[in-house]
Length: 152
Image (cartoon, rainbow, N blue to C red):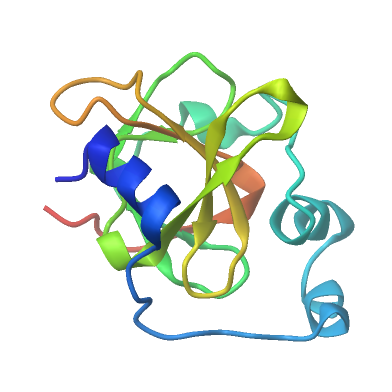
C-alpha cells in the first residue's frame, strides 16, 4: 500500500516503469478528445468543482484513463471527500500513476498523471482516510468508468 513517503520519493527521484507507453501527436489527441478533455488531460487543466456526477457515484467498477484506457482506480478505494472531485485512496497498480512536483499557483503539490500516456489526472494529498492517508483528487473528465466488476 502506497503512503505519502512513497509519493514524495516518486515525485523527487523518479516514477515506476510503466507497463507500456502510448504516445500520440498533439493533433491525434485533439482528434480523439473533446475540447474540455484535451484541456484537462493534455494541458494540465482543472474541471470546475462539483461539475461531474462521478463524485457521488459509488457503484462497483473500475476507472480508466480517458486517453489510453489504462485502468487507474477501483471503486472500492473511492470515498466522498467533499472537494467536488472524485477521490481515491490508492491506484489499482503502482506502475499506472506517475507523480510530479507541481509548484504552480504559489504552492507545492504533487500532480498525478497516467504513467502510460502522461495524461494529467489531478493531484494527490496526504489528508485522506486511514490506512494510507492518501487522497487522490482526480478530474472526473480524465476518467472513464469501465463497466466491469471492481477488484476485490
